[in-house]
Length: 256
Image (cartoon, rainbow, N blue to C red; front, side, top):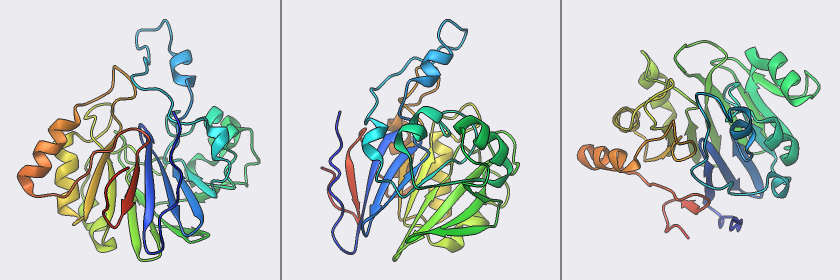
């Protein structure tokens, strides 16, 4: 599978779903990659165990073809959000991580411990046109090892929640950012929101559009996006379900 990597025109940005919680963003000649997992490392790791990670969809792109990426993120240390094979091949110029995970990241990636940009909840940093705001995530536990990122660039704001459940104060934290596009998990297990909860959050924070993720990667941990679509239609929440590798343009245009 190959990606149509044509950048967006002036005054817009392009986004591609890479599978699981991975997204590629292009804006003004700069490239951001959220939590890429573009390998079979987990399938190999858990083969012949009680929880095999059987892939449902092919790898959307060879990470070595994405070496133009200016900045990538890891929201937490689970391999589908911090994959040494993917990041080693991609070689992003910068990596944004939870500060609490610095030693773990350095050990897993074999990089200098001071290379990555570490954030705690409430912190902010910038890479090129992308300004990152770290917000808490509750991946079963709500600790500094788990983050979401609100990213502002130009006139746009994108929220990548990482893996998270709903938690007290979440809406109040996110709503002031006036989010254009929210990228939210819908698998409803292993410490993540369900489709109904993701739709609720998108509506409550006033997101202009919600894109679901964290499904259709592994057979044991997936969900039907049709449940998300039904709920968004019921509550009047704009949404878009992306196909793997499809190019999406915001402000809203057709996917190609």
